[in-house]
Every structure is written in structure tokens, then in C-alpha cells.
Image 1 (cartoon, rainbow, N blue to C red):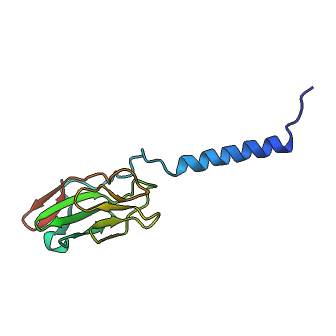
Image 2 (image 1 turned 90 degrees about the vertical axis):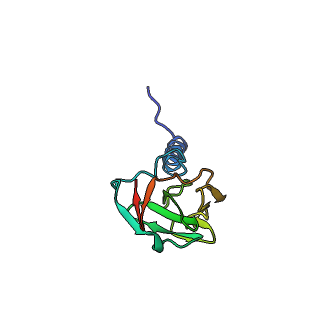
Image 3 (image 1 turned 45 degrees about the horizontal axis):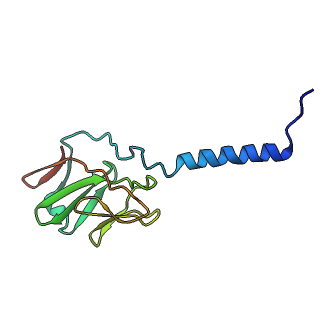
Length: 135
């Protein structure tokens, strides 16, 4: 004779399964959220559009281009390494994520303010004359 599971057993199993699914969706800092389908050679901006000490976010291309010093341009994924939110602003020398307050330095993408623990992945760009394009 088989015994039916108790209500407590069913609730515990359901709760554990829900928790497992919820935890696997968020906080996966090992996922490659920075990938993009944009082709190399795609022009992102003119150099004059990127402020010195700041940057500009290109949402469709999933790229942030910064100019830490005059004439020095850097590019990073615009996907926060904490939980995969898209960053929304560049100000005060940092690239800023609205979800949990992570901030990244515009010069190298390193973490300036947690909860993110990993830097933004760098993207390759090419500056040709006054044009900035994906490399």
C-alpha cells in the first residue's frame, strides 16, 4: 500500500522548486549578457558626440562608448554584470545601472560601486578620423 504525500511535503517541495528556479534566473554573474549581434564596422558615433569625462549609451548595439581623457575612447557592454540590466546613464565618471546601483569606471569598466563584482566586458572599437565604429 502506498502512502499519499502529506500537504506539508507538497508545500515544501513546491517551495524548494520555486526557490531554485528563481535563484537560477537572477544573479548569474557567469552568463555572457554582453553579446551583441551588431556587425563590425557599424558606425556608432562621431567623436564630437562623446563628452570628455563622460560617455554615450547605444541601446540597440548594447554598447557604451566613453571618453575618459580627450581623444581616448573606450567601449564596454551596456549590460550590468550584476543581474543583466541595461545601464542607463553615464555621469560623474561612471557608467550607472538603475537596477541595484552598480557603477563602473568609464576608463576601464571596473566596478566603482557594488553590488556588481565583475567589470563590464570591453568592446573593440576603431576610431577613424571623427568616426567611432565597432571593430
